[in-house]
Amino acid sequence: MNPLAGKRILVLEDEVLLALEASDTLEEIGAIIVGPVHRVEAAMALLDSVRPDAALLDVNIAGDTSAPVAQRLAGKNIPFVLATGYGNRTDIAGGRAIIDKPYNRRQLQAAFREMFGMEDSLPPRP
Amino acid sequence: MGLIGDSPDTAENLFALTDRLFRANSLGDVYDAALDAICSLLGCERASILLFDQQGVMNFVSWRGLSDGYRTAVNGHTPWVVGEKEAEPIFVPDIGETSEPDWLKERIAAEGIVGLAFVPLFAAGEVVGKFMTYFPARREFTAYDRDCAVAIARQVGFSLERHRAQLARESAEDRLRESEERFRHMVEDAPIMIWISDETGRCLHINPLLRDFWGVKDIATFNWGDTMHPDDMERVGGLMQKAVAERTNVRVKGRYRRADGAYRVLETVARPNFGADGSFQGMIGVNADVTEREEADEHKRLLINELNHRVKNTLAVVQAMARQTFMGDAPRTLQQDSFEGRLSALAQAHNLLAAESWQSASLEEVARKSVNGDADVRISFQGPHVKLEPRQAVTTAMALHEMYTNAVKHGSLRDAKGRVRLEWRLEQSPEPLLVMRWSEKSPLPVVPPTRKGFGTTMIKQALGAELNADIDLDYLPSGLVCTVTARLPERERRQ
Image (tube, rainbow over all chains, first blue to last red; front, top):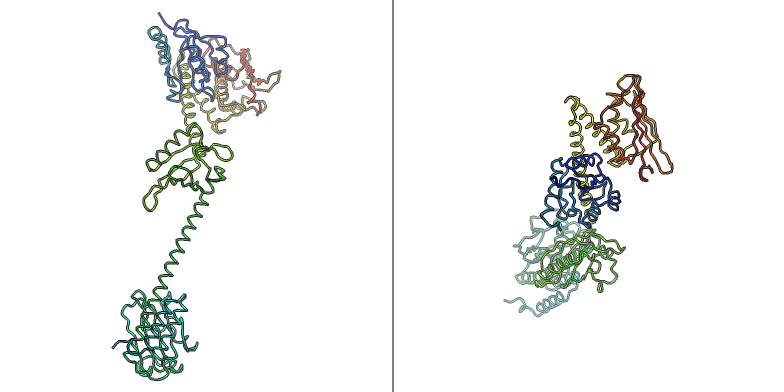
């Protein structure tokens, strides 16, 4: 069974076209998209009322970083994937999955499949 | 036969000369003593002392009983040159018997001189001058005269040597003093901070620049560690202590609080300072304020990161655009044309932004660039000056490009007589709004599209989200009317 079916995934990506692409890509494998949102404040506001199962965060959001959202998710034990054009951003990744922009649809889907596939057998990452 | 034994007067005169030379305070004293000794020991009334000057000219420096005219006439005359080591006294019983030129003989005769002697003066083994003795009548010089002359010359030579050594020493001291003074000025005025510490690392001396930087009032109670940024103390303090303990060079950067309270990044380069006996005396170092350089480096790093981010994002946008363009079942050549048009619209928007240092772009310019060569031909523009931030500009350009190509393919611009008006205005109702309307006027009836493609996504979703706008697409028989009602945040309206 598709481990992603029905999972609610928050998409935070400031480039609207990319947000639409990513949402489309994740919906294709059964996910339900929360958002997509294009600003950190919008993501934070959304998290006040919704608890997604996972998130896709672009690291650089309109000149800021999505670090506050990442911290909030980490605090709630919600797993997430970071997308970045900066190369290595281990400083805010905290050991979580990073996918390099530009990523293709298969890479994005694989990142989330791995996240949910592995959660069944492994304890949450620190 | 000994010289001194010849006459008690000789001994007495030589003792007197020696004693006076010993006590001489100046070269004048030396010359006086020498002239007295020459006159009394050689029994003459006239005598002179001449020395080579810097140019090697033999000049009168002291004399007895010679006229100015005579001295002027014979000045410079010398049987020896500077630095000669082997020079013997020359005794001339009668100048008239020599082969000297007539004018010289005549000048000497005119001065009332017949016999004369040239006695070389040596200092440090080289001829430095001579003394002369003059007689009014022919003079047969004896071995005694020669001995006296040489004895006087030796004594005077020693005194000259001593005097020259003294001058050289004084001059060396002067040079050293000047050099120290120069060095002190360099340190005082240097555009870099300079310090000297003792063997425990405490500052002993700091130059004015560093004094001003730290605002030091009393060096004795000053502790540079107190000015260090707390977060840098452990690292910088540790490295400095290590350098002091191991007596090694050190180079370290750290933040220090300036007298005005601002933290500045100082780069310190220091080395151990050893005394003449090799003992460790502390450190000597310079601090350069590299704050601007650090900030420039940081700025450059940020720019490169930002560039990297933009390039990657743009590639991702192009990737999405390509996927969506080539996804449908339209003929390949049409898809390629669409893709190239979209790439070109993206590139045009980037051009506009680059011209404004990627700060903003004007809505009108963005619109004009998005409609190929149709601006002011079939498409008119009307609206106040509005600045769009970079991302809005790119998305607006791409959305307008979609409207334009759609109009060319299916809408009013299918026909040469077709028109489009693009109008926008700023409203306050009560929140600030940008209302933009694209309205086509087609002479031929326009059929609404049956399926949604990339163009619709770009206009409805992308533009809607980017401008925080409601998008109203109205497909009328006269063509598309698209109304964009954007709630622009505070910063865009201020322009």
